[in-house]
Amino acid sequence: MKVLSKKNFPAEKYSNAVVGFGPEESQFVIGLTDHHNAVDKLDIGTAFSHFGISTQDIYNTVEKVRASGGVITREPGPLVDGGEGTVFAFMNDPDGYSFELLQRPPTPQPLSHICLNVLDLDRSIEFYNKSLGMNLLQTFDLPQERYTVGMVGYGSNLTQTVVIELKYNYNVTAYRRGNGYAQVAIGTNDVYKSAAAVRLVIKEVGGEIILPPGPIPKMDTKITRFLDTDGFQTVLVDNEDYQKRIEEREMKQNP
Image 1 (cartoon, rainbow, N blue to C red):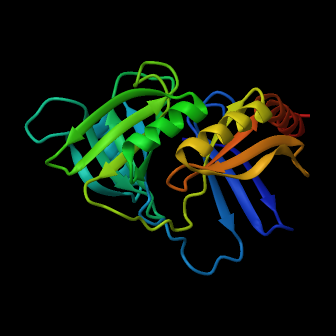
Image 2: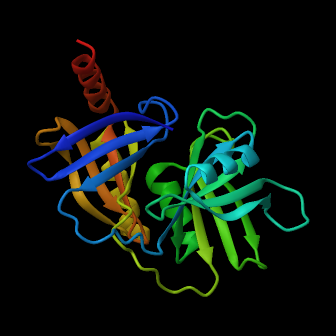
């Protein structure tokens, strides 16, 4: 990954950076925030599970992570010991965030997914399908690992798009939210229409609009925020406004 943008907000007492494998207008990226007055270590909690990264050579990637000081929490291997399938590994970054590394062919989205732990998988799949128009791309159940997964996203090819991995862990009835994971951001051509669609789904299956659609002061960007059925936050951002912000930033950097 490389740093795509970085900005300091002294009045608000925080800084943020955007990192990813490609331009943020077309790639899934990670936003990093440093709260200047934070005394205690952020609590990632147990609700957020991990990020996913696709790589063509997982063994080489694991050794690079290890050499850089990362902690490998699961060595590369197939999903089921002795079985066939995707080779994967797990690592932790210096702040304790978990990343799943997946061996895959070349993909336009190397930062491939985020995984969220949910309490009712069917309800979560329904929420993302109806509110955001995401397709159910794959489901699988691993009784020996005691969890079931549903992959939702746009498009039809699991390895060529970004997905949200919704994970139901057997017999878990509650998760600790923590404060180390904020939200997922998704672009939309009409924030107001998208918010109206989300509001209808919330009435049906649950969730909450926490910021009605409209422009954000100082940002000149229209957004809306809502919580899904498990309390995970999503922000919808106006595509045209966001593109203007990127262009303005690039003009300042390259006058």
